[in-house]
Length: 178
Image 1: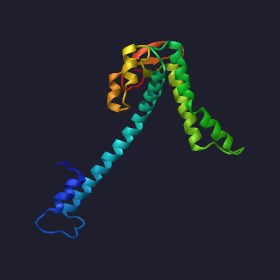
Image 2: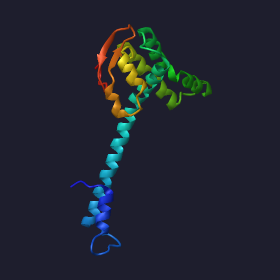
Image 3: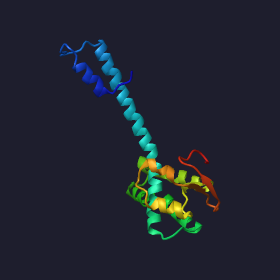
Image 4: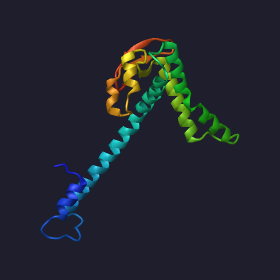
Protein backbone atom coordinates (compact mmCIF):
# COMPACT_ATOMS: atom_id res chain seq x y z
CA UNK A 1 0.00 0.00 0.00
CA UNK A 2 1.83 3.08 -1.26
CA UNK A 3 1.68 6.09 0.99
CA UNK A 4 3.50 9.34 1.14
CA UNK A 5 6.13 9.91 3.78
CA UNK A 6 4.03 12.54 5.55
CA UNK A 7 1.07 10.17 5.90
CA UNK A 8 3.24 7.37 7.25
CA UNK A 9 4.88 9.71 9.79
CA UNK A 10 1.47 11.01 10.87
CA UNK A 11 0.04 7.52 11.32
CA UNK A 12 3.03 6.34 13.35
CA UNK A 13 2.93 9.42 15.59
CA UNK A 14 -0.80 8.89 16.35
CA UNK A 15 -0.39 5.39 17.77
CA UNK A 16 -1.84 4.65 21.23
CA UNK A 17 1.52 4.41 22.86
CA UNK A 18 3.87 7.31 22.45
CA UNK A 19 7.08 6.26 20.75
CA UNK A 20 10.19 8.19 21.59
CA UNK A 21 12.52 6.00 19.56
CA UNK A 22 12.03 3.21 17.09
CA UNK A 23 13.94 -0.03 16.99
CA UNK A 24 16.13 -0.28 13.90
CA UNK A 25 14.17 -3.12 12.29
CA UNK A 26 10.73 -2.52 13.74
CA UNK A 27 7.71 -2.49 11.45
CA UNK A 28 7.26 1.24 11.90
CA UNK A 29 10.87 2.03 11.01
CA UNK A 30 10.62 -0.22 7.93
CA UNK A 31 7.48 1.63 6.87
CA UNK A 32 9.29 4.95 7.31
CA UNK A 33 12.29 3.77 5.28
CA UNK A 34 10.08 2.49 2.45
CA UNK A 35 8.04 5.71 2.38
CA UNK A 36 11.22 7.82 2.43
CA UNK A 37 12.79 5.82 -0.40
CA UNK A 38 9.56 6.10 -2.40
CA UNK A 39 9.40 9.89 -2.01
CA UNK A 40 13.12 10.24 -2.96
CA UNK A 41 12.54 8.12 -6.07
CA UNK A 42 9.55 10.23 -7.08
CA UNK A 43 11.60 13.42 -6.67
CA UNK A 44 14.46 11.99 -8.79
CA UNK A 45 12.08 10.92 -11.56
CA UNK A 46 10.32 14.27 -11.49
CA UNK A 47 13.63 16.17 -11.71
CA UNK A 48 14.82 14.01 -14.62
CA UNK A 49 11.53 14.55 -16.46
CA UNK A 50 11.71 18.31 -15.91
CA UNK A 51 15.28 18.36 -17.28
CA UNK A 52 14.21 16.57 -20.47
CA UNK A 53 11.10 18.74 -20.84
CA UNK A 54 13.13 21.94 -20.46
CA UNK A 55 14.70 21.46 -23.91
CA UNK A 56 11.30 21.44 -25.58
CA UNK A 57 9.99 24.32 -23.47
CA UNK A 58 13.02 26.48 -24.30
CA UNK A 59 12.69 25.77 -28.01
CA UNK A 60 8.99 26.58 -28.17
CA UNK A 61 9.51 29.68 -26.00
CA UNK A 62 12.16 30.95 -28.44
CA UNK A 63 9.79 30.58 -31.38
CA UNK A 64 6.96 32.09 -29.33
CA UNK A 65 8.99 35.27 -28.85
CA UNK A 66 9.67 35.39 -32.58
CA UNK A 67 5.96 34.84 -33.30
CA UNK A 68 4.98 37.71 -31.02
CA UNK A 69 7.24 40.08 -32.95
CA UNK A 70 6.06 38.92 -36.38
CA UNK A 71 2.77 39.98 -37.91
CA UNK A 72 0.75 37.39 -39.79
CA UNK A 73 2.04 33.98 -40.80
CA UNK A 74 5.72 33.55 -41.54
CA UNK A 75 7.35 32.54 -44.82
CA UNK A 76 9.76 29.65 -45.08
CA UNK A 77 12.87 31.82 -45.50
CA UNK A 78 12.08 33.77 -42.28
CA UNK A 79 11.57 30.51 -40.40
CA UNK A 80 14.92 29.23 -41.70
CA UNK A 81 16.61 32.40 -40.40
CA UNK A 82 14.94 31.89 -37.00
CA UNK A 83 16.20 28.31 -36.86
CA UNK A 84 19.74 29.45 -37.65
CA UNK A 85 19.48 32.11 -34.95
CA UNK A 86 18.22 29.49 -32.49
CA UNK A 87 21.13 27.17 -33.27
CA UNK A 88 23.65 30.03 -32.94
CA UNK A 89 22.24 31.35 -29.65
CA UNK A 90 25.27 30.12 -27.65
CA UNK A 91 27.97 31.39 -30.03
CA UNK A 92 28.80 34.44 -27.90
CA UNK A 93 29.22 32.34 -24.76
CA UNK A 94 31.43 29.85 -26.61
CA UNK A 95 33.63 32.68 -27.90
CA UNK A 96 33.84 34.20 -24.41
CA UNK A 97 34.84 30.87 -22.85
CA UNK A 98 37.38 30.35 -25.60
CA UNK A 99 38.92 33.80 -25.10
CA UNK A 100 39.12 33.35 -21.31
CA UNK A 101 41.00 30.09 -21.70
CA UNK A 102 44.79 30.31 -21.61
CA UNK A 103 46.66 29.04 -24.68
CA UNK A 104 47.43 25.35 -24.53
CA UNK A 105 44.76 24.57 -21.95
CA UNK A 106 41.90 22.16 -22.66
CA UNK A 107 38.41 23.53 -23.12
CA UNK A 108 36.10 23.75 -20.10
CA UNK A 109 33.23 21.35 -19.52
CA UNK A 110 30.73 24.13 -20.21
CA UNK A 111 32.39 24.95 -23.54
CA UNK A 112 32.40 21.25 -24.53
CA UNK A 113 28.74 20.95 -23.56
CA UNK A 114 27.76 24.01 -25.63
CA UNK A 115 29.75 22.79 -28.65
CA UNK A 116 28.10 19.39 -28.37
CA UNK A 117 24.65 20.98 -28.17
CA UNK A 118 25.47 23.15 -31.20
CA UNK A 119 26.61 20.12 -33.22
CA UNK A 120 23.50 18.12 -32.23
CA UNK A 121 21.12 20.91 -33.23
CA UNK A 122 22.99 21.46 -36.49
CA UNK A 123 22.69 17.74 -37.34
CA UNK A 124 18.99 17.89 -36.46
CA UNK A 125 18.57 20.88 -38.78
CA UNK A 126 20.09 18.86 -41.63
CA UNK A 127 17.73 15.93 -41.02
CA UNK A 128 14.66 17.93 -39.97
CA UNK A 129 14.43 20.57 -37.24
CA UNK A 130 11.42 20.10 -34.94
CA UNK A 131 9.42 23.29 -34.29
CA UNK A 132 5.83 24.58 -34.10
CA UNK A 133 4.25 25.18 -37.51
CA UNK A 134 4.66 28.92 -37.99
CA UNK A 135 3.10 29.03 -41.46
CA UNK A 136 -0.34 28.13 -40.11
CA UNK A 137 -2.23 31.24 -38.89
CA UNK A 138 -4.32 29.36 -36.31
CA UNK A 139 -1.24 27.64 -34.87
CA UNK A 140 0.62 30.95 -34.79
CA UNK A 141 -2.22 32.53 -32.82
CA UNK A 142 -2.10 29.64 -30.30
CA UNK A 143 1.67 30.00 -30.06
CA UNK A 144 1.45 33.72 -29.32
CA UNK A 145 -1.00 33.09 -26.47
CA UNK A 146 0.91 30.10 -25.03
CA UNK A 147 1.32 30.34 -21.24
CA UNK A 148 4.66 28.49 -21.03
CA UNK A 149 3.20 25.30 -19.53
CA UNK A 150 4.28 21.82 -20.62
CA UNK A 151 0.71 20.53 -20.62
CA UNK A 152 -0.45 23.00 -23.27
CA UNK A 153 2.30 22.10 -25.77
CA UNK A 154 0.18 19.28 -27.20
CA UNK A 155 -2.29 21.84 -28.62
CA UNK A 156 0.14 23.00 -31.34
CA UNK A 157 0.83 21.55 -34.76
CA UNK A 158 4.49 20.69 -35.26
CA UNK A 159 6.65 20.26 -38.33
CA UNK A 160 10.15 19.14 -39.18
CA UNK A 161 11.97 21.55 -41.46
CA UNK A 162 15.21 20.58 -43.19
CA UNK A 163 18.02 22.85 -44.27
CA UNK A 164 16.94 22.21 -47.88
CA UNK A 165 13.48 23.62 -47.09
CA UNK A 166 11.57 20.33 -47.00
CA UNK A 167 8.68 20.52 -44.54
CA UNK A 168 7.04 17.42 -43.07
CA UNK A 169 4.42 17.11 -40.32
CA UNK A 170 5.54 15.98 -36.88
CA UNK A 171 3.98 15.24 -33.52
CA UNK A 172 4.48 16.10 -29.89
CA UNK A 173 6.64 15.09 -28.08
CA UNK A 174 9.24 14.49 -30.78
CA UNK A 175 10.63 10.96 -30.89
CA UNK A 176 13.27 10.32 -33.51
CA UNK A 177 12.14 11.46 -36.93
CA UNK A 178 8.43 11.92 -36.17
